[in-house]
Length: 116
Image (cartoon, rainbow, N blue to C red; front, side, top):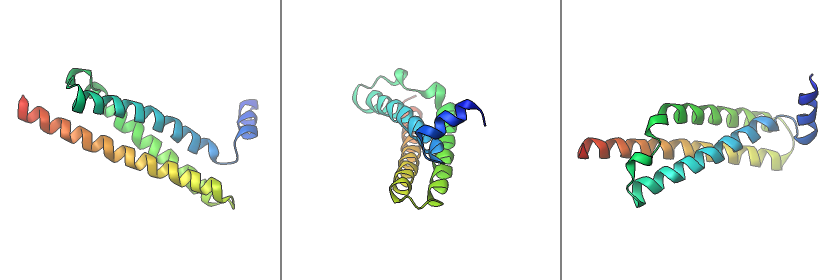
């Protein structure tokens, strides 16, 4: 075990690093999603949306969802109920964010097919 691993173990309980990484990625995805929704529905600046990074965003969300699922699995093996609840909440938030991003992409594709 390296010294960096020991420092992270001091700050987080076992299995919590995956959940915290999924939480960080969730906040990144939430900010990109909020920007895209604002540009699509309110300002209609479609050129400012993240169309060029759709594949990267979807791949990143799948990774975040997998990390949240693994963190939730590790948390289920503990007897710490707040930790399990937190990990399950992060898993559900990442799942909802994935399907929201997917539906926004389909709406944007439908709009581009109708108008272009």
